[in-house]
Length: 227
Image (tube, helix red, strand yellow):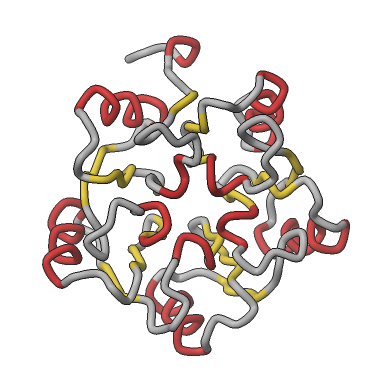
């Protein structure tokens, strides 16, 4: 086993530090665009202590935007192809559902861990019901720093939450209440407040955009329980 101090934490995908647009994870799996080279895939596996699943979703490399899930299952963009869904099922053993909503970037509109979810205020009742019934989470509507795309404005694991640096006291208290976890504010990629666009994390590890500063790394590790 590679020691934590030796594990790569700073990443880019196709030259972009916004790795959360391309990559997402659960406790057991990290989902990546199928075109990535094996060295990079292995580095993501080590960082997140999760098994790699290389896929395209919606015939796109934007896997971080088009997949969201937890230990009970996965939700994908309505535009996911049948063969992509079958591949996800086969590679993970998880059930996979298309989100029944016009909001297609599921990774952007849903902030979720194994117990709860905060979703875009305009997400449909059908979509909320699917999350409750299939992924077994408590679901609430809300914003983070006034941002409706909550999956881009924060990251939640089973150990902690890191949120947009401009989130209000009321929003932070709401996050703490619904997830039952400590919440901190921070940034990524040398000042970007859009945490979910550049940070991929579970309770075992994290990967973040390669423009992230040492101070920002310290806040990430504190917020997500790695110190």
